[in-house]
Length: 238
Image (cartoon, rainbow, N blue to C red; front, side, top):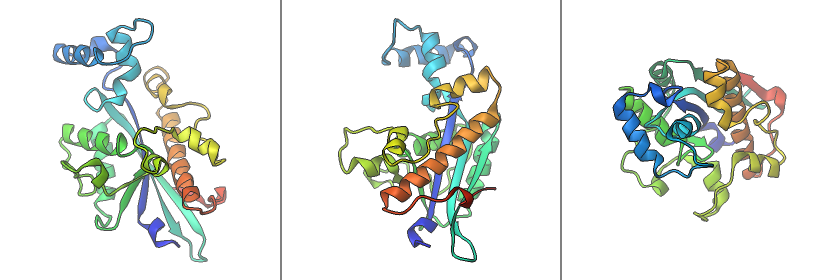
C-alpha cells in the first residue's frame, strides 16, 4: 500500500446550533448573536432568530458537534486496499469528543495527517474550539494554536484543488461530480442537519450522511493523486 495513504486519517463533522431556538439562549448569548448577526448577509430581511436557526451551527461559538466520522486506508492479507470507517455521535458533545480524542492519541503525531474538505477553515479549528469549550485537552494532532494557515501540517482536499488560488472556493459536491464519484448528497445535505436533528430527531440519518462524506473525501483524494477509486466491497464500517 502507498505509505502516504497509510498515515492519513480522513474525517468530517456535522454541527448544529447550540440550542434549537434563539429564544432558548441566555441574555449574554442573545446579545452576542445579535452582534454577530449584524455582520452576516441576510436574505429577505431575515430576523436574528431566523439567522440563528439557519446559521448558528457554522460557528463554534454558537454551535456544537453531534457527529464525527473518520476513515482510514489499510491493507488486507492478500494486499487489497480497504477503507475502514467509524463514527462518534450523540447528544453529549463532550463524550463524543473524548472518544474521538482517544483515537487520535493512539496515532503517531509525527506521521499522521488529518484530511478533510475545507478542513483547515472549518473542521480542524471547529473541533479544537469545541474541545476547549468542553474542557477536553487538545491532542497533539489538533494543538495548532498560533500556527499560520499555510503551516498547518494537515491535508485539505479543497486546498489541494486550489493550486495556490486563494480566492477559489469549490464545494465537495462539485468536485465529486467533476471526478464522477458517487455523492454523499442523496437524502440530505449540510443545510438540513439542524432540521433533521431538532425536528426529525434522526441522528442515525445524520451519521450515515457524515460517514458518506468521509468516504467521498477519501475517494476524491485518490482521484487527485491519480489513483483508482476504491471498490464498494472494500469499504468496511467498524
